[in-house]
Length: 238
Length: 243
Image (tube, rainbow over all chains, first blue to last red; front, side, top):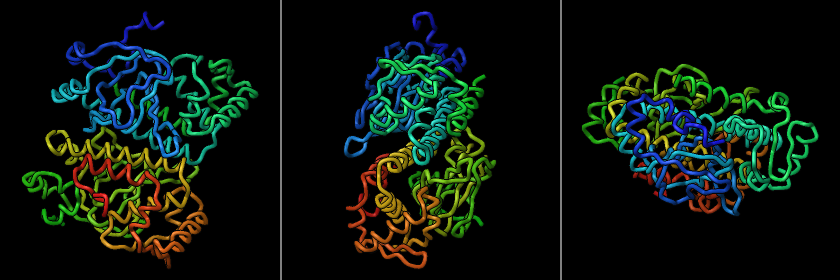
């Protein structure tokens, strides 16, 4: 399905650029696959490329002592993976892991910085994305603090579905346990509960949203907050 | 009241600017004093000023629909309140509340935006600060999820201590509980444990650091992750030891 889409139109970020600025970027962009489980960078790596997802999902994963992991962000076609490069820090602090297969356009970090130097709309889009990212980061903080695993799973699924434009999501329970920062058994149990309520279906690594509107009704307010912020961010481009 | 540069440089972000930049900006700053518990703005408010603390500490609290709060970050003489402003936002999603009384300088939003747009050192510095702040928020999320209240309290005391001139944090357990997003009893228990280990004393709304090294030993790695990033990005450490 990805072969029919124009990658430059699919990433909201790139499609929001004026023609002249987009043309300036073109020679520096190359398309690449995002395969499930791919690690784009890990803590202490130099971030060599920034990625503009066209489809798929990249999670930013934080690692704590004792190998506990938790996702602090999820980026899809609305954004860019590698924001720290723009903010002056080209050494990664988090892992960027593909949690939904797809494609991305990527660019060398040094090219990103050079293009920012030229000014125009590009840096201001990066600022707006930063703002969106801070909002969703804060919301993730709140959600992990106050909400149980089932609510957080619902929230995660709704966000993932929005980014993928697809009812079906190929994801392992191990990846979900990493994204939500809980043990695998807790993920299994939460999936079981949602399945029993006929909100989702899970079979051999494929998670399908069966009843989107009821799933939305079951979500914590965090989903609506992030969704509204994302809408505002995308409307600014219109 | 206008301020001169000798006062401005108490804020490390401002101090990191070239001298001639500071001199140029001097008249755009205004000094203000805060009492414990003052609210600089509520979540969703339109914002008039960005604040650069000198001796005060400001806590950014995320407020949920049901009124529950949790701290997403603290800002003292290491930074500014108002990152979303130069990032194109008009409002902020958190409440900014004074966690430790003291002074700050402020700049109007239009001046802040104009300075940011000029590019150059000011913009670079603001971007790097934003990255450091994002590290603090994400590490707080990690800490909330994975570490005990004792460790979180340790982290919080150390981060505050770094931003204070004295060893005493004037702070009720109620306020700490709002910030850490845990019940007051949990804070009281944790503070008692730290006091028993002779790392702090804890009475009448004041926590006093008596064994800084001991606290650093007891804290989770989150404290160091945040500090290292501030040191790396802002080149001047704010930690009393790791700097």
